Image (cartoon, rainbow, N blue to C red; front, side, top):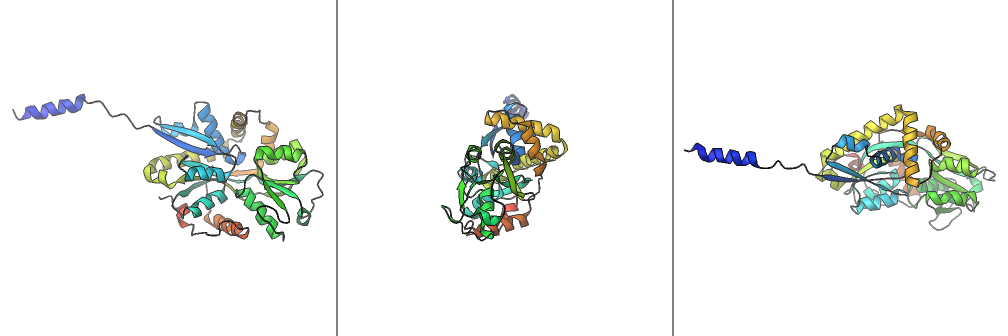
Length: 321
């Protein structure tokens, strides 16, 4: 008789419905630039229903992609809790880390190096750094990686640079707006990233004055909140990113076409094969993030008035909440 209650309990458990796996939505930021090729592939394959990341994260994870023009906007979204992860330039990542006293952001991996350049008019009289005095130079956004690089370079040439003027006028301008302004010669120079560098060259007769061949262009960062609540998911996403980065380096032709398709869909205009082919050799895709390179970027940013309250960077690369 004592076996009956146990038997009934076993039957109740067996009859209970299996608990469904928890559904998760992962919100990821990226820019429609070649230096964000992993984000471009991720967003486009999601759009085409064969998502690179979804295939590796499993059927219970939905990935939503959010496009930004430049890093400061993406980091504001991450700090506000609107996104969970983002591809971003190193300077905005540093700024967000320092602003939050190391509490809100972690670098998970590298993504790209190179792909940035200072472009001047094809018939420009700008032949030497001293010639930039009184000229207008556009960058994608105040405080983004190219903006800081431009200001630091100009300061090293002996120019006084302020946010609103100085010896050279640095004008934060969205990438899509730089091209027509450059074409109509309302800008003397632009410091930007691919594919905009190549578009300025091939569509607006621009020429490269200075190229950042080895500079850190893009990293993958996570909110600390996501690391605390879903550490395994962060590991899975990072592993998928590392795999994708290796694929970009070993499948050049296919990768270029996939990124081109993503750019076309994002900008709603056919991205030129010629421009993508011209730009691709300037990029190096890597999953490595060098803390020493970030320390140099801090010093560079401080030289032009950014990141004045810098803190140690050890937690930025810890991979821990």
